[in-house]
Length: 108
Image (cartoon, rainbow, N blue to C red; front, side, top):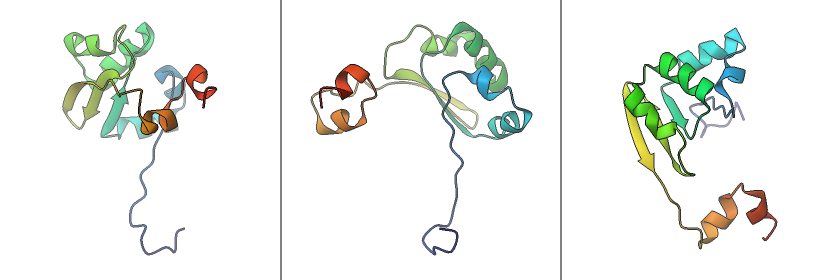
């Protein structure tokens, strides 16, 4: 892939269930601190505190990742924090392909 002329950028991507697991490594913490884009869904209390401190997110903004429903959260991009709601229609082929809910996957 490194010799492929169509690939001009490589973007590191990470997914984690718990931010404290991610930040247990100093090397990974450095990557996180240099990330311009973070998408956050519902977060546990301890993880919310870490994210609020690391990303300088206000308590009012953190309400969007506190006891929220699926498809609701915050996007952190540079110095912008944007709440979002995306209740994706379940009766679509795209939803069927993307769902990660075991009870829905088994009915494929």
